[in-house]
Length: 325
Image (cartoon, rainbow, N blue to C red; front, side, top):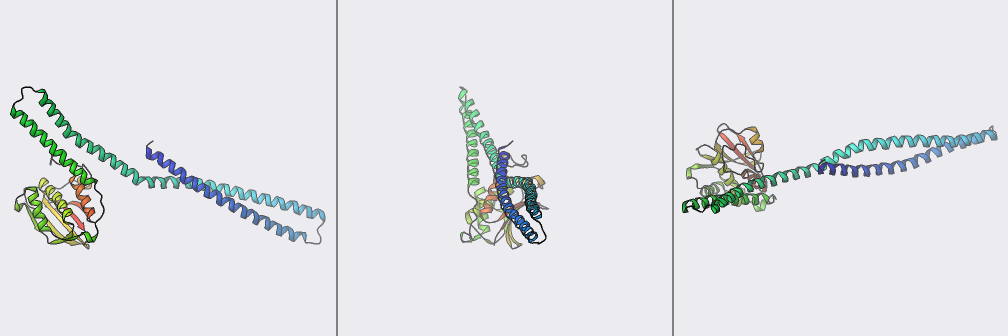
Protein backbone atom coordinates (compact mmCIF):
# COMPACT_ATOMS: atom_id res chain seq x y z
CA UNK A 1 0.00 0.00 0.00
CA UNK A 2 1.45 3.36 -1.03
CA UNK A 3 1.76 6.37 1.26
CA UNK A 4 -1.02 8.17 -0.57
CA UNK A 5 -3.34 5.18 -0.18
CA UNK A 6 -2.59 5.13 3.55
CA UNK A 7 -3.17 8.88 3.71
CA UNK A 8 -6.47 8.47 1.85
CA UNK A 9 -7.62 5.86 4.36
CA UNK A 10 -6.63 8.04 7.31
CA UNK A 11 -8.40 11.04 5.80
CA UNK A 12 -11.43 8.85 5.12
CA UNK A 13 -11.43 7.84 8.78
CA UNK A 14 -11.41 11.47 9.89
CA UNK A 15 -14.18 12.40 7.48
CA UNK A 16 -16.25 9.40 8.59
CA UNK A 17 -15.64 10.12 12.29
CA UNK A 18 -16.88 13.69 11.90
CA UNK A 19 -19.89 12.50 9.91
CA UNK A 20 -20.77 9.82 12.46
CA UNK A 21 -20.46 12.25 15.37
CA UNK A 22 -22.74 14.72 13.63
CA UNK A 23 -25.20 11.93 12.81
CA UNK A 24 -25.20 10.66 16.41
CA UNK A 25 -25.68 14.16 17.81
CA UNK A 26 -28.58 14.69 15.43
CA UNK A 27 -30.05 11.29 16.37
CA UNK A 28 -29.84 12.00 20.09
CA UNK A 29 -31.51 15.37 19.68
CA UNK A 30 -34.17 13.84 17.45
CA UNK A 31 -34.75 10.96 19.88
CA UNK A 32 -35.26 13.32 22.81
CA UNK A 33 -37.64 15.51 20.88
CA UNK A 34 -39.59 12.61 19.35
CA UNK A 35 -39.85 10.63 22.62
CA UNK A 36 -41.19 13.70 24.41
CA UNK A 37 -43.72 14.22 21.65
CA UNK A 38 -44.78 10.57 21.85
CA UNK A 39 -45.18 10.81 25.63
CA UNK A 40 -47.18 14.03 25.35
CA UNK A 41 -49.40 12.51 22.68
CA UNK A 42 -50.09 9.42 24.76
CA UNK A 43 -50.71 11.55 27.86
CA UNK A 44 -53.30 13.62 25.99
CA UNK A 45 -55.12 10.45 24.95
CA UNK A 46 -54.92 9.00 28.48
CA UNK A 47 -56.19 12.26 29.97
CA UNK A 48 -59.16 12.28 27.62
CA UNK A 49 -60.01 8.68 28.59
CA UNK A 50 -59.69 9.39 32.32
CA UNK A 51 -62.31 12.09 32.10
CA UNK A 52 -64.92 9.63 30.92
CA UNK A 53 -67.50 9.20 33.77
CA UNK A 54 -68.32 5.55 33.24
CA UNK A 55 -64.74 4.18 33.76
CA UNK A 56 -63.95 2.24 36.91
CA UNK A 57 -60.76 2.43 38.97
CA UNK A 58 -59.52 -0.80 37.39
CA UNK A 59 -60.05 0.67 33.94
CA UNK A 60 -58.04 3.72 34.91
CA UNK A 61 -55.18 1.54 36.22
CA UNK A 62 -55.22 -0.43 32.97
CA UNK A 63 -55.13 2.79 30.96
CA UNK A 64 -52.11 4.08 32.91
CA UNK A 65 -50.32 0.77 32.47
CA UNK A 66 -51.12 0.84 28.78
CA UNK A 67 -49.77 4.38 28.61
CA UNK A 68 -46.35 3.26 29.84
CA UNK A 69 -46.38 0.37 27.40
CA UNK A 70 -47.24 2.61 24.45
CA UNK A 71 -44.47 5.07 25.33
CA UNK A 72 -41.95 2.26 25.71
CA UNK A 73 -42.91 0.67 22.38
CA UNK A 74 -42.81 4.04 20.64
CA UNK A 75 -39.34 4.76 22.00
CA UNK A 76 -38.13 1.28 21.01
CA UNK A 77 -39.37 1.73 17.44
CA UNK A 78 -37.73 5.18 17.30
CA UNK A 79 -34.39 3.74 18.48
CA UNK A 80 -34.54 1.02 15.82
CA UNK A 81 -35.24 3.53 13.06
CA UNK A 82 -32.45 5.82 14.22
CA UNK A 83 -30.05 2.85 14.39
CA UNK A 84 -30.82 1.91 10.79
CA UNK A 85 -30.48 5.56 9.82
CA UNK A 86 -27.02 5.85 11.41
CA UNK A 87 -25.92 2.57 9.82
CA UNK A 88 -26.97 3.84 6.40
CA UNK A 89 -25.17 7.14 7.06
CA UNK A 90 -22.01 5.25 8.06
CA UNK A 91 -22.04 3.05 4.93
CA UNK A 92 -22.94 5.74 2.41
CA UNK A 93 -20.84 8.32 4.23
CA UNK A 94 -17.84 5.99 4.31
CA UNK A 95 -17.94 5.53 0.56
CA UNK A 96 -18.45 9.26 -0.01
CA UNK A 97 -15.65 10.07 2.46
CA UNK A 98 -13.22 7.76 0.64
CA UNK A 99 -14.08 9.29 -2.74
CA UNK A 100 -13.69 12.78 -1.30
CA UNK A 101 -10.36 11.86 0.30
CA UNK A 102 -9.06 10.44 -2.99
CA UNK A 103 -10.17 13.53 -4.85
CA UNK A 104 -8.56 15.78 -2.23
CA UNK A 105 -5.23 13.95 -2.41
CA UNK A 106 -5.22 13.43 -6.18
CA UNK A 107 -3.58 16.79 -7.09
CA UNK A 108 -0.97 16.28 -4.35
CA UNK A 109 -0.25 12.74 -5.52
CA UNK A 110 0.04 13.91 -9.12
CA UNK A 111 2.40 16.73 -8.16
CA UNK A 112 4.50 14.34 -6.06
CA UNK A 113 4.67 11.83 -8.90
CA UNK A 114 5.61 14.58 -11.34
CA UNK A 115 8.34 15.77 -8.98
CA UNK A 116 9.73 12.25 -8.61
CA UNK A 117 9.85 11.81 -12.40
CA UNK A 118 11.51 15.19 -12.78
CA UNK A 119 14.18 14.40 -10.17
CA UNK A 120 14.83 10.98 -11.72
CA UNK A 121 15.09 12.44 -15.24
CA UNK A 122 17.29 15.32 -14.08
CA UNK A 123 19.57 12.91 -12.23
CA UNK A 124 19.87 10.75 -15.34
CA UNK A 125 20.66 13.74 -17.55
CA UNK A 126 23.28 15.00 -15.10
CA UNK A 127 24.84 11.56 -14.64
CA UNK A 128 25.56 11.07 -18.35
CA UNK A 129 28.00 13.99 -18.90
CA UNK A 130 29.55 13.46 -15.48
CA UNK A 131 30.22 9.82 -16.32
CA UNK A 132 31.80 10.80 -19.63
CA UNK A 133 33.95 13.43 -17.91
CA UNK A 134 35.13 10.99 -15.27
CA UNK A 135 35.97 8.18 -17.69
CA UNK A 136 37.88 10.46 -20.09
CA UNK A 137 39.86 12.10 -17.32
CA UNK A 138 40.66 8.74 -15.69
CA UNK A 139 41.89 7.35 -19.01
CA UNK A 140 43.98 10.47 -19.56
CA UNK A 141 45.54 10.20 -16.09
CA UNK A 142 46.37 6.49 -16.51
CA UNK A 143 47.98 7.06 -19.89
CA UNK A 144 51.67 7.84 -19.42
CA UNK A 145 52.41 8.15 -23.14
CA UNK A 146 49.58 10.44 -24.17
CA UNK A 147 50.62 12.97 -26.80
CA UNK A 148 49.70 16.63 -26.66
CA UNK A 149 47.17 16.05 -29.43
CA UNK A 150 45.50 13.27 -27.45
CA UNK A 151 45.43 15.46 -24.35
CA UNK A 152 43.94 18.27 -26.40
CA UNK A 153 41.18 16.01 -27.68
CA UNK A 154 40.44 14.90 -24.12
CA UNK A 155 40.23 18.48 -22.93
CA UNK A 156 37.98 19.43 -25.86
CA UNK A 157 35.68 16.49 -25.18
CA UNK A 158 35.57 17.34 -21.49
CA UNK A 159 34.80 20.96 -22.35
CA UNK A 160 31.89 19.82 -24.50
CA UNK A 161 30.47 17.91 -21.56
CA UNK A 162 30.97 20.95 -19.29
CA UNK A 163 29.05 23.07 -21.80
CA UNK A 164 26.32 20.45 -21.85
CA UNK A 165 26.16 20.54 -18.05
CA UNK A 166 25.99 24.33 -18.13
CA UNK A 167 23.10 24.25 -20.61
CA UNK A 168 21.28 21.66 -18.56
CA UNK A 169 21.64 23.54 -15.26
CA UNK A 170 20.55 26.77 -16.97
CA UNK A 171 17.46 25.04 -18.30
CA UNK A 172 16.68 23.51 -14.90
CA UNK A 173 17.03 26.94 -13.30
CA UNK A 174 14.60 28.38 -15.84
CA UNK A 175 12.12 25.61 -15.07
CA UNK A 176 12.41 26.20 -11.33
CA UNK A 177 11.30 29.82 -11.61
CA UNK A 178 7.75 30.64 -10.63
CA UNK A 179 4.95 30.88 -13.16
CA UNK A 180 3.24 34.03 -11.89
CA UNK A 181 1.22 35.66 -14.63
CA UNK A 182 2.36 39.18 -15.46
CA UNK A 183 -0.12 42.02 -15.13
CA UNK A 184 -0.99 44.27 -18.06
CA UNK A 185 1.16 47.02 -16.56
CA UNK A 186 4.20 44.77 -17.13
CA UNK A 187 3.45 44.49 -20.86
CA UNK A 188 4.45 46.95 -23.56
CA UNK A 189 4.30 47.14 -27.37
CA UNK A 190 7.09 44.98 -28.79
CA UNK A 191 8.10 44.66 -32.44
CA UNK A 192 8.08 40.98 -33.35
CA UNK A 193 10.43 41.53 -36.30
CA UNK A 194 12.96 43.26 -34.02
CA UNK A 195 12.82 40.37 -31.54
CA UNK A 196 13.21 37.82 -34.36
CA UNK A 197 16.25 39.74 -35.61
CA UNK A 198 17.85 39.36 -32.18
CA UNK A 199 17.01 35.65 -32.17
CA UNK A 200 18.62 35.17 -35.59
CA UNK A 201 21.82 36.84 -34.39
CA UNK A 202 21.77 34.88 -31.13
CA UNK A 203 21.43 31.53 -32.96
CA UNK A 204 23.90 32.47 -35.69
CA UNK A 205 21.38 31.90 -38.50
CA UNK A 206 21.46 33.41 -42.00
CA UNK A 207 19.28 36.49 -42.33
CA UNK A 208 16.92 34.78 -44.79
CA UNK A 209 16.47 31.66 -42.62
CA UNK A 210 13.58 33.21 -40.67
CA UNK A 211 10.85 35.24 -42.34
CA UNK A 212 8.43 37.47 -40.47
CA UNK A 213 4.86 38.43 -41.23
CA UNK A 214 4.04 40.22 -37.99
CA UNK A 215 3.80 43.69 -36.54
CA UNK A 216 3.91 44.73 -32.90
CA UNK A 217 2.27 42.94 -29.97
CA UNK A 218 1.85 43.72 -26.27
CA UNK A 219 4.29 41.55 -24.38
CA UNK A 220 7.27 41.52 -22.05
CA UNK A 221 10.38 41.94 -24.27
CA UNK A 222 12.73 39.60 -22.36
CA UNK A 223 10.20 36.77 -22.02
CA UNK A 224 9.17 37.12 -25.68
CA UNK A 225 12.84 36.96 -26.74
CA UNK A 226 13.41 33.75 -24.76
CA UNK A 227 10.15 32.24 -26.03
CA UNK A 228 10.89 32.94 -29.70
CA UNK A 229 14.47 31.75 -29.26
CA UNK A 230 13.23 28.33 -28.14
CA UNK A 231 10.52 28.05 -30.81
CA UNK A 232 12.71 29.22 -33.70
CA UNK A 233 15.64 27.08 -32.55
CA UNK A 234 13.37 24.01 -32.50
CA UNK A 235 11.86 24.91 -35.86
CA UNK A 236 15.30 25.21 -37.45
CA UNK A 237 16.76 22.16 -35.69
CA UNK A 238 13.92 19.78 -36.58
CA UNK A 239 12.83 21.28 -39.90
CA UNK A 240 13.96 20.98 -43.48
CA UNK A 241 16.45 23.39 -44.97
CA UNK A 242 13.68 25.88 -45.67
CA UNK A 243 12.64 29.24 -44.21
CA UNK A 244 10.93 29.33 -40.83
CA UNK A 245 7.86 31.58 -40.77
CA UNK A 246 6.87 33.78 -37.84
CA UNK A 247 3.35 35.24 -38.07
CA UNK A 248 0.73 36.91 -35.90
CA UNK A 249 -3.05 36.91 -36.26
CA UNK A 250 -6.23 37.48 -34.29
CA UNK A 251 -8.28 34.41 -33.43
CA UNK A 252 -11.24 34.12 -31.03
CA UNK A 253 -10.42 37.43 -29.40
CA UNK A 254 -6.78 36.50 -28.75
CA UNK A 255 -3.52 37.40 -30.42
CA UNK A 256 -1.90 34.27 -31.84
CA UNK A 257 1.85 34.13 -32.46
CA UNK A 258 2.85 31.34 -34.85
CA UNK A 259 6.18 29.73 -35.68
CA UNK A 260 6.03 27.23 -38.56
CA UNK A 261 8.64 25.12 -40.29
CA UNK A 262 8.69 22.57 -43.09
CA UNK A 263 9.02 19.13 -41.52
CA UNK A 264 7.46 15.70 -41.44
CA UNK A 265 4.33 15.54 -39.27
CA UNK A 266 4.63 14.60 -35.64
CA UNK A 267 2.94 11.52 -34.22
CA UNK A 268 -0.12 12.14 -32.00
CA UNK A 269 1.82 10.84 -28.99
CA UNK A 270 4.56 13.41 -29.60
CA UNK A 271 2.05 16.25 -29.93
CA UNK A 272 0.43 15.21 -26.65
CA UNK A 273 3.64 14.89 -24.61
CA UNK A 274 5.89 17.45 -26.30
CA UNK A 275 5.72 19.87 -23.36
CA UNK A 276 6.65 17.25 -20.74
CA UNK A 277 10.04 17.79 -19.16
CA UNK A 278 12.82 15.67 -20.69
CA UNK A 279 10.44 14.24 -23.28
CA UNK A 280 12.05 13.45 -26.63
CA UNK A 281 9.64 11.81 -29.01
CA UNK A 282 12.10 10.89 -31.72
CA UNK A 283 15.73 10.59 -30.69
CA UNK A 284 16.76 10.14 -34.32
CA UNK A 285 15.80 13.71 -35.10
CA UNK A 286 18.41 15.19 -32.78
CA UNK A 287 20.91 13.88 -30.27
CA UNK A 288 21.70 17.32 -28.82
CA UNK A 289 18.40 18.23 -27.23
CA UNK A 290 17.58 17.54 -23.60
CA UNK A 291 13.80 17.70 -23.88
CA UNK A 292 13.50 20.90 -21.82
CA UNK A 293 13.02 23.60 -24.44
CA UNK A 294 9.28 23.28 -24.93
CA UNK A 295 8.71 22.89 -21.18
CA UNK A 296 10.46 26.22 -20.66
CA UNK A 297 8.48 27.72 -23.54
CA UNK A 298 5.25 26.61 -21.88
CA UNK A 299 6.32 28.23 -18.61
CA UNK A 300 7.21 31.49 -20.40
CA UNK A 301 3.85 31.45 -22.16
CA UNK A 302 2.06 31.04 -18.84
CA UNK A 303 4.04 33.98 -17.48
CA UNK A 304 2.58 36.02 -20.33
CA UNK A 305 -0.93 34.79 -19.51
CA UNK A 306 -1.26 32.66 -22.64
CA UNK A 307 -1.33 29.08 -23.87
CA UNK A 308 0.86 27.16 -26.30
CA UNK A 309 0.27 24.12 -28.49
CA UNK A 310 1.81 22.20 -31.38
CA UNK A 311 -0.08 20.93 -34.41
CA UNK A 312 0.69 19.45 -37.79
CA UNK A 313 -0.01 21.41 -40.95
CA UNK A 314 0.04 20.53 -44.62
CA UNK A 315 3.62 21.85 -44.87
CA UNK A 316 5.14 21.05 -41.52
CA UNK A 317 4.73 21.66 -37.79
CA UNK A 318 3.19 24.78 -36.30
CA UNK A 319 3.73 26.17 -32.79
CA UNK A 320 0.87 28.45 -31.75
CA UNK A 321 1.06 30.82 -28.79
CA UNK A 322 -2.28 32.43 -27.88
CA UNK A 323 -1.80 35.63 -25.86
CA UNK A 324 -4.35 38.01 -24.34
CA UNK A 325 -4.69 41.29 -26.20
